[in-house]
Length: 436
Ligand code: SF4
Image (cartoon, rainbow, N blue to C red):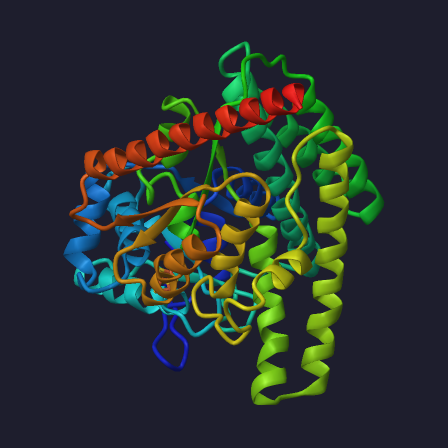
C-alpha cells in the first residue's frame, strides 16, 4: 500500500507510488471534451475515471459536507466525488480525486479546499486531491502532465467543440435514432488513435481533422422541418453538465426543440484574455501580457479554422471571440470577468444576432457573478431586442425539475407563438408585394 506523504503545509500529496495503484476520479462537465481528456491522461499511464453518475444522493452528499450557502456547482461536484468514494465501487484507500482550479477570483479556485474539508468531515482525509490548473497553484510528485499532454488537451478541447456543435445541429433531425451519438464515438476513436501515434497534433492536421469531423456528421441522414432553436447559456458547470442542469439538452430535444450551446473555446480564450486585461487595468509585467497574447493568438487561429470548416461543411458556425468582444461594447466593461463575466452576456447577444432569440439562462444558487451578467442583463437585452425570449432558470438543491421544465415549456410556447407571428408577417408582406 502506498505511503501517505504530506508537504510542509500538511497537504496530502499524490505520489509516484500512487500513480501505479490509484484510480483518479474526476467529475464530468462536458461529457465529450472531458471523455477525450480522460483517455489522453490514461495514455500517460494513469488510471482515470470520469464520473457520469446522476442521482439524488449526489445532492444529499453535497448538502451533508458543504455549507448550503456555497454555490450549487461546488455542492454538486463535491457531492459527486464523495458519493463515488463511498459507493463501494472503489477501494477508498486506492482512489484520488482530481478537480480543476481556474486560478481566477471566483470560488471555482477554492472548490479544492472545500473538497478537502468535506473529506475530513466524511472521515476520508486519507484520499489525495489533485489540482488541475494552468496557474502553477499546486504540485504533486506523482501527477505531472508534460507539454505534449497539455498540447493534446488543448486539441481535445477544440475537437470536443466542433464535435458537439455539429452533432447538436444533426441530432434533432436524424432519421436513424442514435446515429449522431454513434458517430461521436467513431470520431473520438479516430482522434485518439491518431494522437496515440503522435499524429493530429499540428495545426495542419487539426484542420484536416476538422474537415473529417464535419464530413462525418454531414453524412448522417436527416429529415423534417427546422425546429425552434433554443440557446443555452449560464454559469459554465450548470450550462454544460447534465447533472447540473437536470439533463436540459435532453429535455429540449424531447420537447421538439434544437439546443444551441455555445462552445468552450470562447471561455478558454476569455480566461487567457483576462490576464491581459489585468495588466491593462491594474498594471503588471509586460512579458506576461505578451505571453498571453501569443497563446490567445494561437487558440484564436484554431477557432477561425474550426469556424471555416463548419461553414464549408454547410453547418451554422459561431462567431469568433473578437466578434463577441465587439458585441459586448455598450453593455459591460472588460473588467467584469468574475465567473463567466461579460462573456455570458456576449453569448446571449450572439445568439440573438444569429437568429436564436429563445434562450435558457441557467443560474446556479449562490452564484453572484453570473446573476449579474446573466439574469441582471435580461431587462437590458429585452429593451434593445424586444423579440428576445429569455428565461432565467434557477438550479439549487431544492428546485424541482418539474418547476424548471414548466418554465422552459412556457418559454417554448412563446417561441412558437413568435415564430407563427413572424411567418404570418412574412406572408402578409408577400401578399402586399403581389398586389402592389
Ligand atoms: S461562477 Fe458562480 S457557480 Fe461558478 S464557481 Fe463562481 S460563484 Fe460558483
